[in-house]
Image (cartoon, rainbow, N blue to C red; front, side, top):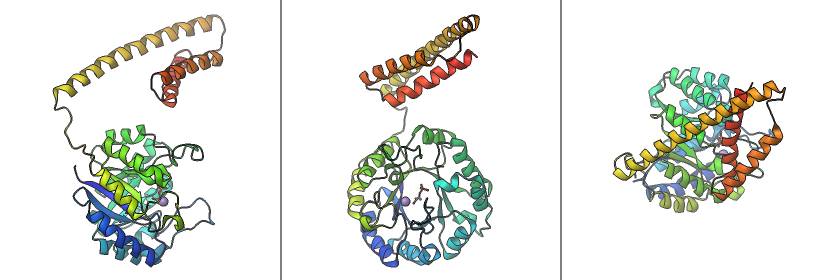
Length: 350
Ligand code: PEP
Ligand code: MN
């Protein structure tokens, strides 16, 4: 397995004792998988919480706790910075790995303020840019560009899922919308893309599944929240793993090997050939469908009919969703595909 990056540690630094406990237990766990993972110790010092009554982080008081813990573990320390004074305080204390949180990436003014902050040695710094809270690829790429244009060269991205308002009922706290990180990787193949399995999953028992999916997809690394006593954590208590749970997970992940180079075998080449031919047919059919839609548009115009016929679309959609279910296709995916096809048909009729 190619070496992956592993950013682990508590959601937030809470006390010197908690960071000390974390360091002692993680040193052993990470030592056991060092052939597979390069580690970074994380802990939030400034927490961007929705409610002002929630734990807001310990701030600069926690800097020495985090730095000492990372020193004990023999790895770099990372923390979240959201405004210039966070960055300056953490940099002056000796921290060189910074992540930009999802809420901060969502605000170009704040990213610009971080990028413009005077830092003596930019080459010593590594930035991790989390995706914004909404599935807006331009906002994510824009944040990466701002950091890059400021003269930094060590930049990674972190996929932490998107707030689609489904967290109370859905499987995830933040829906992965994998198409967004896939597009990010297409645009920035050289920027390491790390998966924050904890903020996607939102529940400790689902972190492993997300981490495994990401590993099979070929992620460059993982961010996983770990706390010595998750039940009593001051933030994100539901999603943090114990060090023992992390150990189990890492040993399982270490068996996933996706290092083989693509395009080597005759079997894969033949299968890709079949995909290309199928896509040719699919696109020819889509084009035929749009031609028919255009003719229907002419008919509607001649007969003074509204372009959008909602009842007819609902009937088409229900039929396709039922078909998808019977053929092992995710109904939600089927709906998204139909929505795009139908939207294009409607637009050709205007
Ligand atoms: C975090 O990593 O603890 C955090 C607050 O992340 P996000 O910005 O992804 O919500
Ligand atoms: Mn967290």
